Image (cartoon, rainbow, N blue to C red; front, side):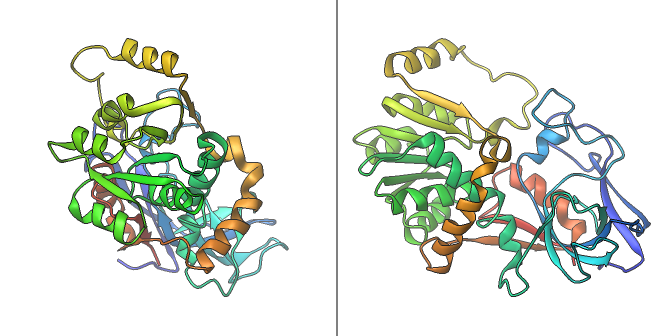
Length: 342
């Protein structure tokens, strides 16, 4: 069903999932299109970003952000057009980056809205390489990874919107970049299109041996997007004074219990102590939001100059969002996954 001028479709959280979200997790509702009050704007969603962090918002476990309440629309970054404006700072037709979630329409008082240039060729890229994922890669690598020319960087989730950007920035800064991805096609993309020096398939039985072969001098910076067995293979390869920007743990997001097997905590702590490893988690706008203008200028120039390649996976229709999100958590996405709503 296409976007309608008088009906607001919205995916609301119906129940908190245990493990992987299923057909009962979200419910598609329709409601009248809201009317903006004085000082407000009505936003019509054009593109919806799908990101792994959304799985955490479905849970009410303690976290860095409030959970989505039962019966409320699922949160998410969007590119939207101003359909009506009662706010002097925005005109009808303005295109903005917003956080209006999994729905056709939302009302905003203008807080947190960022206007996009009217002539922007690919507005959905503001949800990817020119938006939060790109900023995450740029700031996390610079501020935590502290890359130095000649070092070896390894990236988990190397063909995703964050990992692919991390690897390309590392190459621009003179590092050897080794990707970790799922399957030969993604690994070919990492090397042939993104410019990684090598890519290792984590689904291969020889994964740990392959990673050791491609990191003969060890690993100086490991960008963590995955966790689980991938990190188990990386840890012994880390060099003294290695740095780990801890961005995500997508392999664990649907877990309902601790992993089976021996407790590896002492092994991890011992490695970190002996090798003086730095691992730091971060929340991009909370920790590094003040750097966004610098990022926007530098990344915008890199993209314009063709120094950063970007792959977007566009999925048609708001009704496809839940299935596309589950596929994202399963590792099926190839590039930045975006829903075209309008």
